[in-house]
Image (tube, rainbow, N blue to C red; front, side):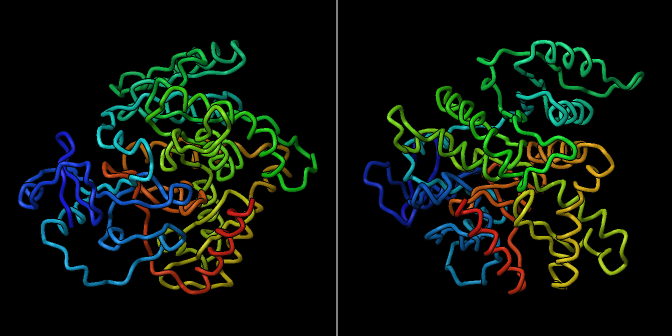
Length: 413
């Protein structure tokens, strides 16, 4: 193992970096707070950085679905001080295969985030309302942008007038911004949408129908993020979130000749927010059946916001029949709202959008789609000071096989 000092940062690696200043382990062991583990993985299937939440991640050779599986306890023969830092989430892995890997060393998350939101339709407006009501402790300001100037004026007026009288609650300021200001923030939230099916309209696979129009819109903003050297989180709320995340990653990392150079958004900067409502829908239907009521405390949701979704009734007591029942009920929940004559946007905007975004900012566990082995896969995770930490579980063999099918399906689209 080699130890390095890069500026005022401490790093270590199993790889030899001749261009770095090598130091003795004793100097590294004195460092308080975050240190960095340098590795070299293939960029198109690996993240630029992530939290080293267990010892096995120091020996990771490639990233895939097994990131969700709890590793076997191995004898990695690590020093106590390194084990302590791992348990304290004080080690961030950095993939030096990315040309701009050094920039990760000096990124400091804000104490309060500035959030910018594009798209003020049904979902965007509802999400904004949730952030205004609940985001005062962690969001300083929310910039809003829409191609409709009237919509921006309306929401700046309306949202800033949400106030609890005679209480000292904090509320983020809502401010209309220009398109050029969109990436002057800590989190960019994409809520713009083009092909939203009307009530009663038969479009086949709704997610792929929406992807056709929304991918063109997100391409524009992904390129803007690259040009602005954006360092924050690129949050995708519009459907289909997992596919749009991948589209944003690809478009952001092309140079002016259209060649992938990995000089744009890092894979872990992009997050998709669609799984939160699927968990909420599963919990709703689970509560109506005594056989599935334990889902609220024992179950998990995985995968996309649509076909390929996997609901597990319980991790400890996995039951295939009950899980299939909950998955089916969850998948068709939006159709029940449509049959009542309404577009299903309130729960997605709040459960997948506002609440999950706030938990991301606060570093709490939540559901979102993050990058795993070339695919954006929804699962429980949290954003720590050392990077994204995925929940790792002992998964039933049948459950893991279903997750593999979803993973492979997402990889081929």
